[in-house]
Amino acid sequence: MRLRLAIFFFVLVGGCGRAGDAPESTSAPVSPKLSQSLVPSTATGLWTDRTQVVEGRLFTALQDQPARKRALMYGGYRIDSGVLADTWEWDGFGWIRRIPDDDPGPRFAASTVWDPIRRRALLFGGFTLERLLLADTLLWEWDGNNWAAIRSDAPPPARACASMVWDPVQSRALVYG
Image (cartoon, rainbow, N blue to C red; front, side, top):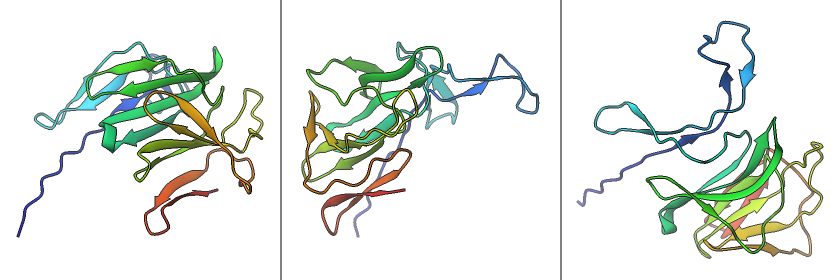
């Protein structure tokens, strides 16, 4: 019998919370400007704040890329500056801004999944600034350096806030919702 040891960690970035130090039970306004990157310590169980240059945001596409030992973050929404179209990678220590030649354009609430066969992150759908569904119905792939649009003869309808998973039996991405 072989023993396998797996170490899992996760990063908490962005989101929204109560303004200031107000407890959740108050009616204090919700602030979407959380720009902390929090990493749990396996030794102490405490969270470490890895303050970053990444703007706080909501509804970002965040994807683990196990073969590259990185996480990908794309776009999102900020109340004060609108819809974002930036690409960032987490390398286990901090965020690295990536500036590709092409990108999927401003969007939030897009779906994302890792394609283990082609070793690429896939991105689909989302909302525009006007909260309209993106009608591009393109699948975008990130290869670690650039985004590329993948056209389909029969794309699914435009959508946002959908779940996206990898089907290892059929070797394809599935979008639901």
